[in-house]
Length: 77
Image 1: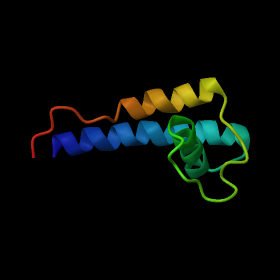
Image 2 (image 1 turned 180 degrees about the vertical axis):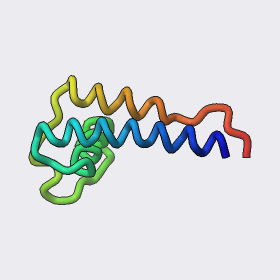
Image 3 (image 1 turned 120 degrees about the vertical axis):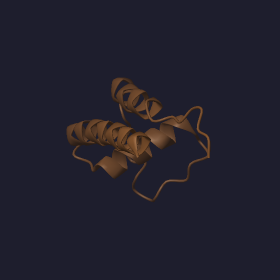
């Protein structure tokens, strides 16, 4: 249970970063997340209209750093 709470807190941190970055562009957090995915991998196929703008490198880096904190390591199922 304790691990679950820690993950929820990390997810909340990522959501706050997505909200902050999305607000700068007048976009939703989901649109910012999709844009971040597009910048990470050309294999991502966006929803039409989601690719008409780009995050700045600094904003991409903020989201990337927040997402790296969520990476699970040493998980035993």
